[in-house]
Image (cartoon, rainbow, N blue to C red; front, side, top):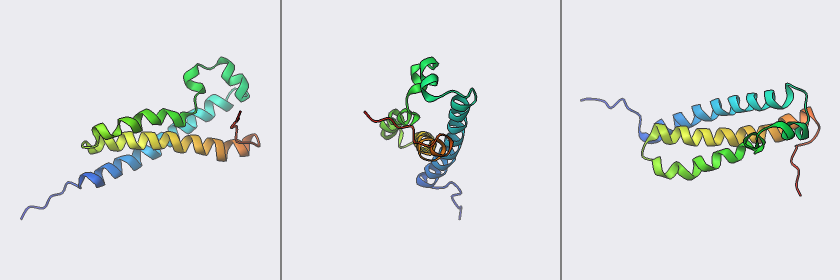
Length: 113
C-alpha cells in the first residue's frame, strides 16, 4: 500500500500562509522602522518627501491580495502566499501603530478627522 506523503491542500495552504505572514510582517516592519526613524524625521516630515505609495498605511496594501484570493484558491501555495502576505501587511501596520509608535513617540500616530 502506497502512502500519500503530500499534505492536503488545506495543510499546505496553512503552512505557506503562516510562513509568509511571519516573513512579510518582519520585513515590512523593519523597512517601516528604517524609513521612519533612521533619519530621525517626524511623520509629517516623512510624508512631505516620501512618494504617495509609502504614505499609505501598509495594511491597505493587503486588500487587493485578499480581493484576488478567491480566484487562486485551488492553488494552495499561491493562495497561502497571498493570504500570508496580506496578513503580514495587516499585522505589521497594527504592530507599528499600537506597539512601536506608543513606545517610541507616545501615541498611535492615527490622526482621525
